Length: 276
Image 1 (cartoon, rainbow, N blue to C red):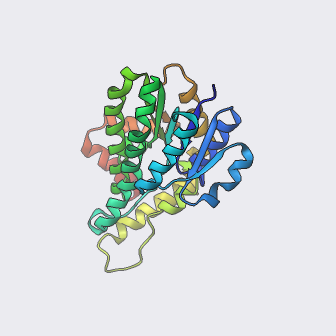
Image 2 (cartoon, helix red, strand yellow):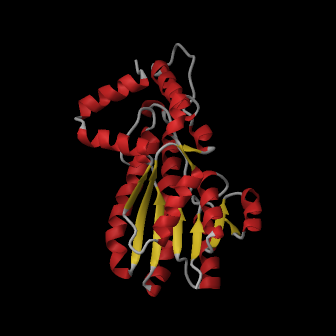
C-alpha cells in the first residue's frame, strides 16, 4: 500500500522540493498551498494538488476530509507552511505577532489534531514539523519568528510522548540557513530614519542577513533539496529520530547556545552581527 503524504506550503522552497522528492520516491503526495495555481505544475510530477490555508479552519478541515474520504487516512503529515517575521519587539504590531503564530504554530497544531484520529485507528502514522535551528537558538531581530519555532518545538516534544503508544512518530526537522524564497520574504529591511531608536540595530541585522544569504557566509547555506532528502529519511526510517538538525552551521550555533553562558553568548552575537 502506498503511503499518503499531506504537505503544506508547497508553492516554493522546502515544501515544493519535498513534494517533488517524495512523489519521485513512490509516495502519493498531496501538495497544498493557499493559491492552487502556485502548485498546479506539481501535478505533472505526480502530485495531487489541493488548496489549503493553515490559518483557515474550513480549509484545513476540508482538505483532510477529502484525503480521508478517498484513502482512509493521512499516513504522513508534513507541516511545512511558515514564514519569518523580523523586527524589533517594541515596534512589532501585536496583530503581526498573532499572525506569525497562526501560521507557524496554530495551523500545524490544528492539522495534527485533524489527522490524528485516523492515524490512531490504524495504529500508524508520522507527523513531521518543519522547525528550524531558530527553534533551538535565538538570533538578533527575529524574536517573533524564533518564538513561534520554540513553541512548535515544545508542542512537538509533548505530542511525541502523547501519541507514541499509538504507533505514531512525531519528528522535528531543524534546518540551518536554506536557499529559498523564504529569505526574501523574511528580510528585516534596513531603516534610514534618524528618528528610529532601533535603526542602527536593524541595519546591522539586515547586513548580517544579506551576508548569510548572499555574501561570504552563503557558502554555509543548504538547498531545499538537501532538506527534502532528510525528510525522506525521516519518513522511511523504521525508528526516526525525534530531531534532525541539518547543516554544520546549525549544529555549531545550537552547540554554542548550549555551552556558553547567556551573557557570553550575547557578546558573541553582538560581535558577529556588529550590533551597536
